[in-house]
Image (tube, rainbow, N blue to C red; front, side):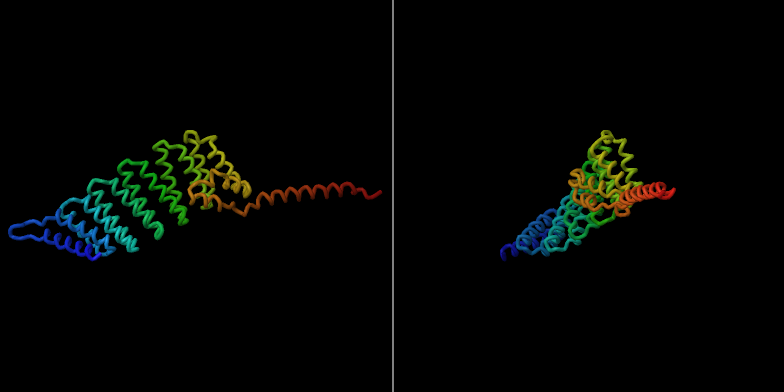
Length: 309
């Protein structure tokens, strides 16, 4: 362990020497310095000295930046972020990864930037859902700007699910609509059907039956939607919800089509309750029973209207 630490300090000393200028050396040797800082960082990391490793990676990033090698500078920033992650300092780690992503874009490698943001989102999900959503949305924007819709829509999908998890249903509804538009653009219609189910569940949890019904009506224009199992199930769901028939709503929501959706949407499905607690149907039945009883009473009164004799 001590040997590795000494090795790391030797690399730091060499890096600093490469950065010095003199009468005969007008310009710092940023490339060689960056290489030494990188070796120092690895040695510190292997010695479990994560703070020192992080600092060495940051010095490497600075040397690469001065040398105009932005891709390698961004890689070093990402590595510094991972050291912070190992120290359980995730918010700081995410800041460095975001800086790295901006540098990747500046370097002309946007795909790498988007993937870095995706990784950052996964890291922070367990601690800060809102920040994870922000990172996934940024990744989606980078992919979208490069006309990489298939990758972009995956990032939007992650955002949608996390918004549902946070019960930010208005934002979730807008996000799912964006997903649906993207899938429509790349002509992935079966996934559009699934997104319509997600939309309807979100809108019904928002108590907005009109918006839910509109989603289904708009989906009739999608090739293959009309008459599909998704369409039939949604029609039955909306009918049951509109008629306050909890039995019908629960039957649809517990079908395999709904139960095996992504977990966040499956939870919406299982917890969906109709307005009024599903009492409308029972009250209607009671009213019919009451009318029948009243009719029978009237008939009895008519039978004895003239008296017993």
